[in-house]
Length: 397
Image (cartoon, rainbow, N blue to C red):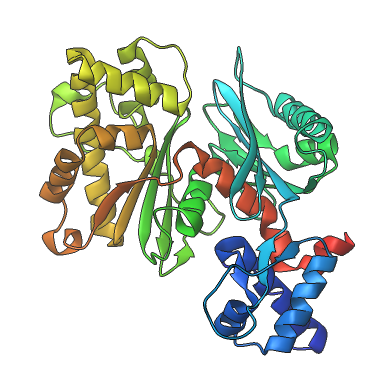
């Protein structure tokens, strides 16, 4: 994630940027020795030592004894993100709200899924977040320092202020969810589209690490969204609404495959249809994936046919993305990962049949490496962004 650089060219601005560089390194690549940080940043050893000491004083990193080494000379101390610095990640969906406490470095410290009888309201979401923080503070995270809340919302989120313009499956329209959660928790809040945050998480910590050009598609209870990384940077669009793959109208070769007349991609490729095929009303991602695997193993023809149908339509959507964006990697998350895992070679062949051969040559299709944690880690990354951009400002606040 490209965090904005604080300050100007003044000494204070340079100092703040260097603090941000060290903290971001500890977050994304740590633990790292001081010597390794010196090599990666180009700063001199005394500057790195001074910056590390300041971050230790701020409670953002900790210095550890060096690992055993056979090298000659005194080993360099290791800098690691402080385990007590935590963000709260939240993903409201049509059947449940998932919440997690995520430490720097993408570590999940606590997680819970609260199933809801009806579709959750913004106000109920804010109360669920506040209740979770209060419980965690009383119990397993009593010593944690909560620095922010990140919400991964399945809908259009305005980048400038986090306003949820439309989350159709939740029935949210022009909702200032950031204000609701900040008022309930007293903690700074950031809001983003769930699939875009999943793409960010996979690029920073998962299957897309080190990949400059990738497409990510997320399949959840509210449909299909996506994220696009081009030359290492997220494509957000003029207002932050880019990546809505699920709102496209798919090309369907056989009318026998169509289930929704003039429907959207997410009407045809649907978690709800998979749940129905395996006889479940609701389920988290691992439970649905296990149920589908069991049904396939039992040679259930209903689920087998539905999987094939959804894969055929998904292949067309992926081929279009490959033709337009020329990525080197396509990542599938959520129930789309389960679709792919059942017959990955068949999916790739179906995509290749419809994509330009030259564009398809170097494309790898994979499932999300972070599994069900991807949206939590992405939402937490959004919550950490202010801290990582300017540790001094957050400490002062």
